[in-house]
Image (cartoon, rainbow, N blue to C red; front, top):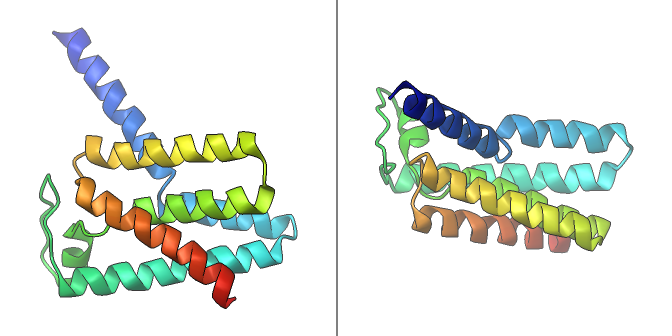
Length: 154
């Protein structure tokens, strides 16, 4: 019985680590990395995409509250926004990052790795009961739309 619990904890920890690749901290690490390498235009494009997705998701969650599959308690307005699951900001961020880097590097190996990471991050959100497929689909569409806007408007 103890071995089963240990394996479950390892798997849950693994999915938490995978989901972190779609998180804000990782996104900021990537931003800092590209800025330090002198890729200013890429940095600005990613920052614009981050801010745009953040605004759209926050507005969406203010106007429409959808509880997470594993409901999250909240006691104030800010926590309520975070407790809402629609759309997935993790999915939007990782898709924005994957598409942007795909077109920036134009390397099929990097693109395959980025696609796999994006799929794993999206699956981790389901596995950890943070989102359902509708939330993820909306996040994926928003990430792709954000990329398109950042290329065509900037």
